[in-house]
Length: 199
Length: 199
Image 1 (cartoon, rainbow over the protein chains, first blue to last red):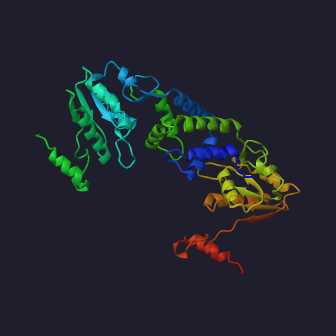
Image 2 (image 1 turned 45 degrees about the vertical axis):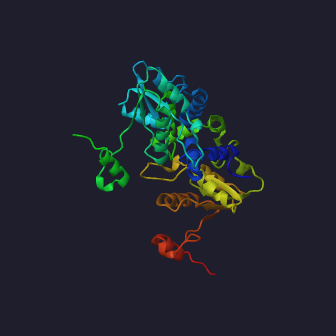
């Protein structure tokens, strides 16, 4: 018979599968949150349930929201002629934090990957092609990550969209703001030099 | 209007207060678990609620369990004559993992601390004195941490128990198993040398 209650044991095991927590930190976390039942555990339980039951993927762009089409797609202040293509919802959030983009989004749900066996039909690409064909769409901005898989996916999308009369652009790669040349990798420096622009 | 749903935002904020997670890892975690609604989020929500509603502090020893007295205190196979005093439930769990102790426990719920203003009446010490006075109790093992606060607390308890006819012992301090002398701090080495024993 273990001194640890079975429910606590289960909770520790479940929490240890949370990204960022391991078995040891999960044990510590459970002991800490048990001390805050009313103020933390019960609200967290309710919220987890509500989000799990209420959140869906936007049928237009793939963003997560309680409504579909999502808040961004429904917002009349957003410019429906520009669509920014991102890999994941976290990238959409990152772009929204800048508050400098006013168009719509399209979430692919990952990248093509030969290693992980992710093919075009596993991603939200068909719907992007449809949206690109729509009359109101004038520009598609590719904002996949600057990784091998991200760039492969971008090139695949360019290939798919080449018959469609829409402008395709990609976010700029170069020296990050605050970055020092000496500490940057060669790839970034080469890209920054190649994509130089008149001052 | 934010692109992030308000419920998701709340969940990220709440999760970021979980020990071990910060705002960034919490955001990542929420996106990951939203993909596993049925297999992870809903079971976690249920378990959090059950534990929050069901777990109480054992009225005898301070352990956490759904029953009070707890599983350890109720177990007829445990030796009720020995009580091991620990700071926190996590220490009780650590000792139980060794499977080498068959007595009962007493959880103090912390240590005396001048800095944090924790006084004897804030800890579960009165009940320990009562338990020490009980006829069946023959030994009290002090297993507070080998920190300044832990040892201060141990000395305070020794002082409180000195009129009571019960054996007081403390767990050994010394070189940890697998430890190399060269890498140990001076305090541990001095303790190991002082507490040497015949081979």
